[in-house]
Amino acid sequence: MRVIARSTLKTFYETPKYRDAKEPLEAWYAEVKHAVWETPADIKNKYGNASILHNNRVVFNIAGNKYRLVVKIHYNTSVVYIRFISTHAEYDKIDAESV
Image 1 (cartoon, rainbow, N blue to C red):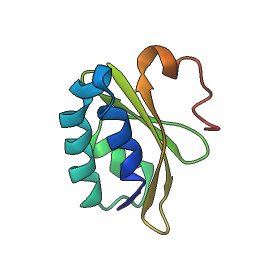
Image 2: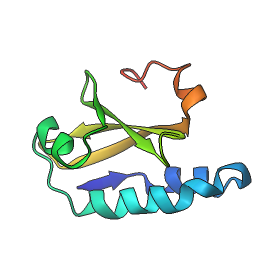
Image 3: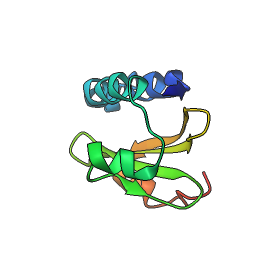
Image 4: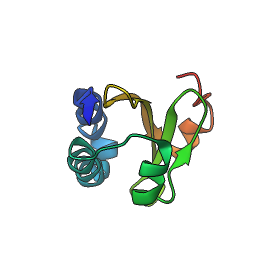
């Protein structure tokens, strides 16, 4: 899969209070760039705790659910768009299906 934009992840974990997210986000990125996801079921097979939402959105729990990562996936072009990354509390304030 092609991930757009990795810089969003880096900007997040380079913020001093989120430095603990670096290792789990980099591990997620390394796995995803080699993944082949053709359907949401492919994601659930690897990430059982991922939440599949409408509008091709998927929510990943990062660092033991301390952070939430929302992506939009275009399965037909193998592109994953980073839409949101922040704390669980900040995630609760957004509409993950429309970010």
